[in-house]
Image 1 (cartoon, one colour):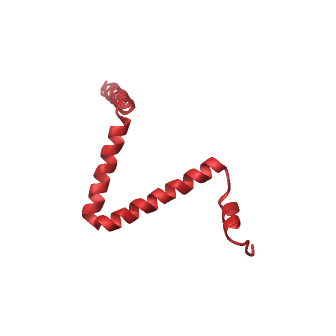
Image 2 (cartoon, helix red, strand yellow):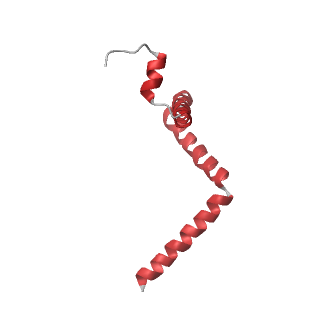
Image 3 (tube, rainbow, N blue to C red):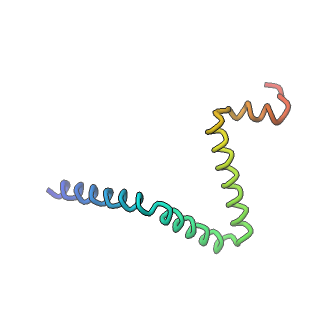
Length: 86
């Protein structure tokens, strides 16, 4: 009986979270990212935090480029740099 009640409680919680996420996705992500930014600033300072944010943003941009272009990273590197020995 206890296991069934726990499963029902979990299902209700997941249902509530799904409804909340769909209604407030931007606010939730904004709050989480803002809190993470504040923790990073307190821990590492503003300039190091901005460096981390720029590196993560650049990584996301490059990843998005490869997802959209369907291009392999080796083709990209060969296009930018002269082909080396393989």
